Length: 341
Image 1 (cartoon, helix red, strand yellow):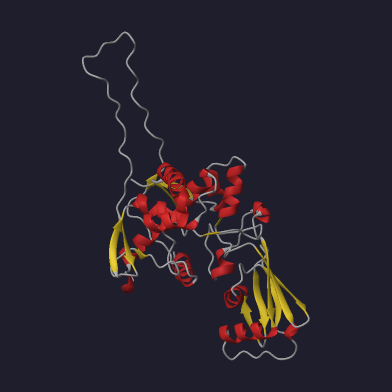
Image 2 (image 1 turned 90 degrees about the horizontal axis):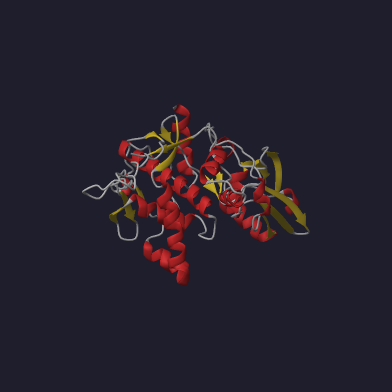
């Protein structure tokens, strides 16, 4: 448990706040079979009825609107739809959208229970806010209409159908909802939470994601002039000393098996690859540096922190015929698909 407490604290610091633990969980079950139909020879006096289990609706989330200070209630279904719309392209495969929906729902459930146990004062009693710099992205219906424009009806219907199929499910580990980290695309192999946030999480470990190599803008190149690089580094690391030629300012010292830069010599100090990524606004911490005259050229691979589910990887798996359950099992190994009751 100590491992999870440490991981949660670091996950908050890594921009995405850690979700919470739901109150009631049960093992996933198959839907009950419907009663057998009457034979053609039978003539019942009343129409036969089929008993169906009620659809899962859950409990509304409390969301703080940071623009108004108002705490509003949003149904679980509407929240998950809004989160998927905000976090994954609606052009992606239905199975990838379903996997994203489960990850988004898991995030929300974990965050809700976290606030029940230890409230964050600035949330004013809500489960989370619509501040995307701290919490999972979420579109209201109006925001989705603005985002999709004339394609709103088609895309919103597609996302809603995907969410409806998987709404009762979340991912758990040892009966707790997981830290359902996800990112746009990996370097070709996802990264461990330990290498990114400094604390190991049993299920946030490297897995192959080779489909990412063909994702759009998998490779990205950013050029920095001497003046720009000096300004960015001195702003991010006050007191840093940058002496000599620009080619001496950045030197990669260690890299993980997944390609994440772990440490880099930056002027007169050592920083992490994640810190340098933030300082230079790079697409990922999987990068290489080369120099041309008075310019530094940084080439990145992938997009995002690289931990958990790769969204482009999930979409590619779906295109190859994988269902949402397979996608989740691949990117969150050792976890269990659990049905909320």
